[in-house]
Image (cartoon, rainbow, N blue to C red; front, top):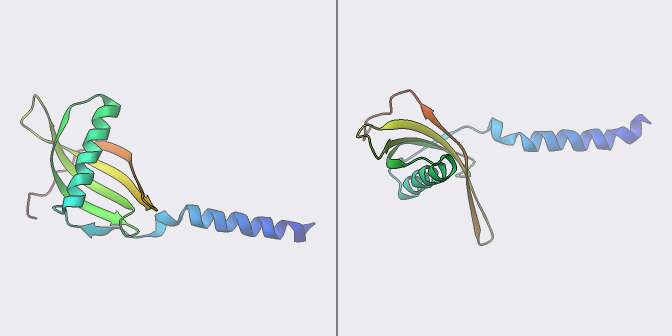
Length: 122
């Protein structure tokens, strides 16, 4: 009976390791002024505005990091509301995949953060 369980156990271990692989890859710093990163920052603000029924205005991406060669992005974004000249800070987690000719971009999380963003150019 134990011999029949070995292939199942091995399959389950491989599945677990593959599904959690993203946890083990380091984050790589990206250029926050890269046009593609700025596009992703604007995408995050647009999606958040639609989902949360808010009216944030994109100001800039302060820092950007990617994982797995640009599949997963973590952005620190400065944004303001229409009625405020002050900006608030947000962290966005975005997944972007391209399969064949179809590009898939998804906002995984978006939250306000309290830490100060670095000044532009730092």
